Length: 196
Ligand SMILES: Nc1nc2c(c(=O)[nH]1)N[C@H]1C(S)=C(S)[C@@H](COP(=O)(O)O)O[C@H]1N2
Ligand SMILES: [Mo]
Image (cartoon, rainbow, N blue to C red; front, side):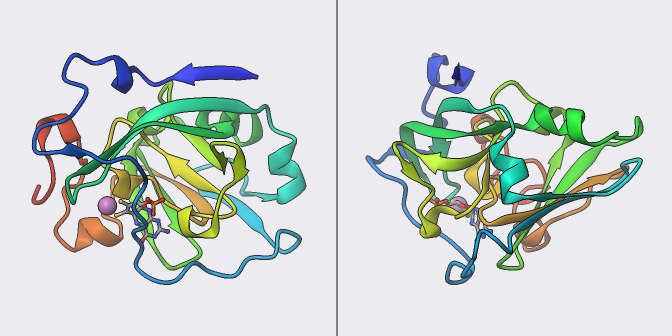
């Protein structure tokens, strides 16, 4: 299996300003984890694509697997080092859907009603994956079962859990927390916690 070590773990300023290390992922979410039966699960790819695509769980498992090691930085100031995830690389989506050239951002949609927006160059980055395993176990429901995004270079509110949709957009648009005052980008090294 291909392994990616996110460049965030090799930075000289590995711990972003105003953060402290913790030894585990704390569970944060806007509601209880949704109940999901994998046979009913669907992942929709829509918006600015030539044709919308719907993937089943079998489709997702057949995508090339990749392992990612990355730190996880929550805007509430805890950071967890060396988290190991397994899933598929965001770039795999380019093999599945024809993404229009004028796309500027994606909106990730989740089964708990959560959304979050990511500029396209941050989404198609070397260390962005959709994960379905955490360390050596299937992704626990609290951490986003069955599928979550992992975006190591942004605060972890961008790492949406329970992902059900990926919407390609020609303009960046604010997601759930971004509408409620979180920064539109959220770069931890620039301390983009709140505000524009
Ligand atoms: N669907 C969904 N994804 C979400 C959230 C949420 O409320 N719903 N919270 C975000 C926030 S603020 C953080 S810090 C991380 C927490 O991930 P964890 O619970 O696996 O530690 O998930 C992010 N992804
Ligand atoms: Mo968070």
